[in-house]
Image 1 (tube, helix red, strand yellow):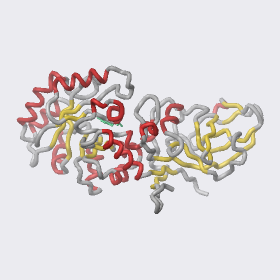
Image 2 (cartoon, rainbow, N blue to C red):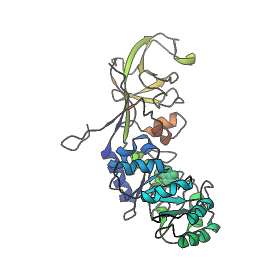
Image 3 (cartoon, helix red, strand yellow):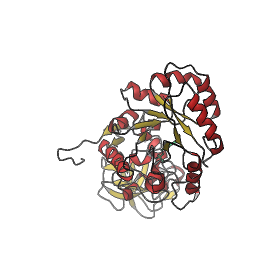
Length: 365
Ligand SMILES: *Cc1c(COP(=O)(O)O)cnc(C)c1O
């Protein structure tokens, strides 16, 4: 038996989640955010499943060029624009859209002599204080872009919300007010948290990321409460089941001790595969579809689970770490992190990727 850790990707769930975006904000164009290798799901696979989007958004030109090389012709937005003026020619040649967030980028555009002008989005810092021009700087930047021969067509004005994942936080209302006081024309404001939780931000170009992968961006509650479907199911198997005695320490540091004689399962998954090392004892793991608690520390290649509720479980039995039946948000919470980090962190060199096959009747196997 070879070590089989599989990230099973469900393209139908990606399409379902894109349709949820469309239902929530009818008529708004959607730039599907597929940076970081499609949040760890595989860039090209995800782009293929989301070809009904109106554009793709990625972090950098390397990601965009992979899409162009694979034959995707949709607009591609570079969320951080260009990192270097040398990228401008490729941006023009491959018809990419650059976010302009800093005065140096504006100057570079004004000095460039491009064969074809490029499309740009102008980023306003409405209060996140990460990237963007201040509201006061926007009118002048807008005028310079309008006068710039390297810029094609109308400029979309965008901003990003810092606290939209907490629906009680008033920062979002303040950011929207600052943006609206200055913005003109086409706009882009909403990532997943705003699309789901802030109806007043559902306008212009939407930029959903995490919700497309079926996970919730909010501090509490999972994607299923928004009728989203998980896209990645991380699977492995039991490679050993051993009976341990009362008081036996389990794993590195011996930090967890058996409270009684009990069966302990060993699962082939660890932080070397992207399972979070900080997952605490008690983190749910599905063995044969039923929840059992993680015990002991997460190792590089293995975890141990308490099989007292499943004494019949044996070697080769199916284990789900997150996905179908176990929200990745729940695992993230037990590990003190967020679903984004777990999904992006799956180790591509070690975990095998597969696609969920659809049956004739349309149901997922
Ligand atoms: C990553 C990113 C998004 C997508 O955010 P989600 O929370 O995953 O929906 C949207 N906009 C910008 C600028 C981003 O960097």
